[in-house]
Length: 446
Image 1 (cartoon, rainbow, N blue to C red):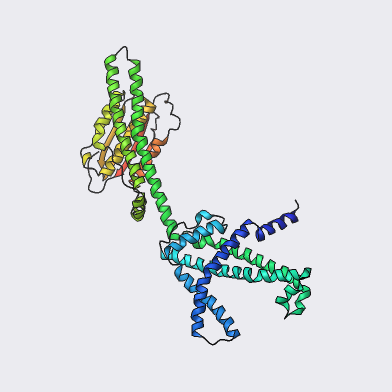
Image 2: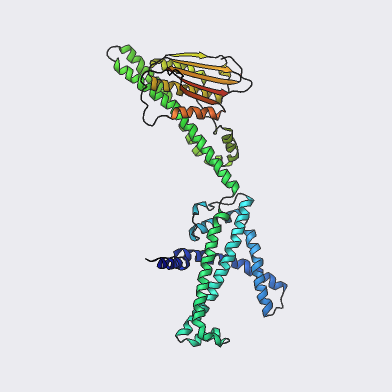
C-alpha cells in the first residue's frame, strides 16, 4: 500500500470509521440532553416577549441556546453526574486512556466544577452536531437527488433559489462533508478534554498516591513480619531437625530435646502467622472504613509508621529467643542493658525483630558459631550490636534470599534510626549495628 493510499484510509477512518460513529452517538446524546434546557429557556424567554416577528423569533432561539447552557451547568454540579458522564465518555468517546476517567461521584467542588464545564462542552457541541444532522443531512440529500432528475423534490428546498439547481449536487456533497468533518472535530475535542475535565483532580491524585503509599507501607510491614518471624522459625526448625537426625541413634535424649524444641518453635511460628493473617483479614474487612481514614493514614505513612504496628513479641522476649538459638548450637553472649522493658512498645517490637533477623542470619550463614549481642541505651537512643566470627568459607545463601538486611534497614528508617552492616576491617568478624531513637526520656548505659 502506497503512502497516499494509507493517508486516504486514515482520513476515511477518522471521518466515518467506527470511532467516528461512536463519537457521533455520544454527540447526538449530548444534543438530546440539551433539548429540555433549551425548551425551558425558549418558553421562559417567549413569555417575556409575547409579540415577536420572524427576526425576533430567530434571535430568541439563539438567546435560548445560550441561556440553556448555564442551567445545564448548574444541574451538572450534582455529584452523581460525574460518574454518569465518565461512563458515557468511556463507552462512546473513544478516549485514549479511559481508565483515567471518573468512575464515581464528585467528592469535591473542584471536581464538580470540572464536571459542569464538561457537561456544557458536551451539550453545546452535541447540540451543534445533532442540529446539523437533523436539518443538514435531509437538505444535502435533496441537493444530491436533484442530480438524477428529482427536480420536483429538490424544488421543495430550492424553488426560491433556482440558481442553486445546477450546483445542487456539489453543494449537497460539500454539506455532507461539512457535517462529517464537524462531527469528527467535535468528537476529537471531547476526547481530548475528557481526561482533563473528567479525570482526577490534583487533590484526588495526591490522595490516591497517599493511599498507594500507605498500602505499600502496610504490605512491606506485613512482609517483614512474615520474613522475620516465620523465616526465623523455619531456619531454626531446619537446623534442629538436621541435628536430631544425625544423633537419633547415638544420642536419643538430645534428639528428643531437639524434637521438643521443633514443636515449641513451630507452635510459636503458627501463633505469629495467625497474628499477621489476622491483620490481613482486618484490612480487607475494613476497606470501607479505611476510605474514611485516608487523611490520618496518609499522615502516618509520611511519619514513617506505615500504619498501625503489628502485635508481636518485644525485647522482653529476648531470653526465650536466645534459649531457642542455644538449642540449635548457636551460643550468644548477650549484654542487655537494664530498662529495656520501659521502651515504647513500637520501638521494642521493631528492636526484637531486628535482633531476631540478625540472629537468624548468624544461624543461616555462620552455622553454630558463637555470637555477641549488645543491646544498650545511650544518649536517648537504643543501640543494637550483633557480631559473629567469619569462617574461612561462607555458607551459601538460599535462593531468593537477601531480604533480611534490607528489612532491617527499613525497620530502622521507619523509626528515624539507622543501621550499618558488614565485615570488620580485619575480615574476621561480621558486624550488624542498629540505632533507634527512643526520646529524651529514655536514658541508660550501654
